[in-house]
Length: 605
Image (tube, rainbow, N blue to C red; front, side):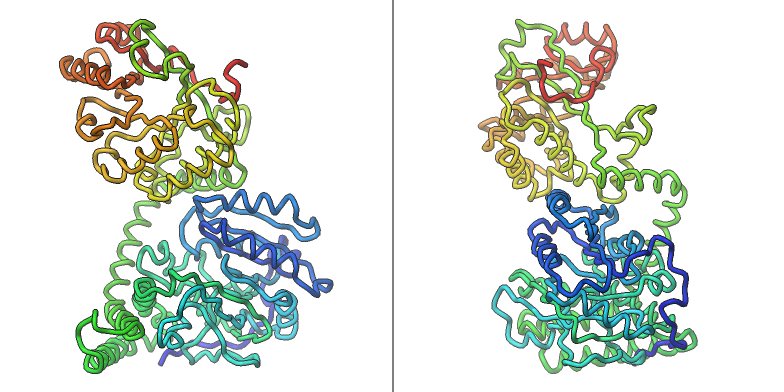
């Protein structure tokens, strides 16, 4: 049995609340790709009743979404009551634990009321949060009664595992979660005193490593154990009622087994945290022996073959197996975390600076787009290339706006390492595409704009749908956009790249391959050719480069044969231009000959 070191009760005023906490309640909504779900949550919050006795706000914590979550919140902000602030913040590090922590940090309420983006509160939910908090000053946190709105057929025996999907139906009367019990409420519908969280919960939880993508869960339980061990009471409040919308995909065998596996792999740390220091040496081995005993009994009862188990038995088996593996799994995670933290600390000041800057950029939309002209050398040669001829051709470049207008915008090479470290490259790609489409809008075909995509977006199966939605929403003429795919990503992930290029061509977009140095790409593209343009690497065309002229000559012949435009990058000297003319390459880019300028909508302007 898990025991908790329970200290004397604290009252809400026992720790100093920062001066910014000047409201009664902050509703914090962590969300990831919640554009389809968040509107219903916000709509119900606008309808909350009996609000005259307290002040409150709503904070949407966007956990690195790559859909239209930010736009949806912005639309609601324009229509939202000024008496109840609706705030948006971007959370760069992926994982619900990071989103909740950011919400607590940003909150101005004495109470934090958490809602997931698929939680629909009853109309009196918020007023019941306030009433219970006032009546129970020793309660550091209290959870809601959670009913399931299942959008699919429930598997047989589902009630035995429903609690793992945050379904909490524990009677019609409030009750205290005893410290010695193994039960605590989930974060969905949880209300917590901000002072209790700030006093007791570490800024970085152990079970926070990108959530289920790293095989972990229970980060909400970890936070509550910290609060409970600090002496606060944890309650169940039956008057606070929410409905948890559960799509059919979460009722499938694969999802449920994976969920229980994550819970099991996290279990050793929850047990370790819940035991007193002097008990840990004795209890942890006892837990291992007991888990092995339970697994053996389960195998005797249901057999060894996993595929023969029904859904509930398969979930139980996954939970037992992963619980047995949990100590080794978490020791490995702890060593990886130590090593990663050691590496991070070397670059910590600069990395924290750019992470903060990127977060502010996404919140305040401070990305700046620049355009660099593609220069035409030989009109006669270029007239035989392709349909881009006759239109101005620009490459769109990304810059990060500085806090002061006196400083030049920052090049991506400065902040890309931080963006890659925290998984923000896909978000950057989508924000740039969205911003460019909004600026182009429904205008005549006046120029062609090339935009680089990362390897992450090339391999992202959801990117084509996002791209089509942006084109339709902003009524952009597809022929005005050309997307550049890295040649390494195209060759290394050819099936995904081919699918993306086919979808782009179907939408009427142009396709370019970036950083090409030989003709290998023609061996992959097949017929019909999916490429409109090849961007030659700087090293391939620079004077004195090791690139064989015969290889380049063959590449040029192939491009003309297939009517593919060639553009040389990084041309900075007259000697480089002379080599291009010798080779017969008609287009080039170079900072010395065409400096990037802020993007303008109307080329003629």
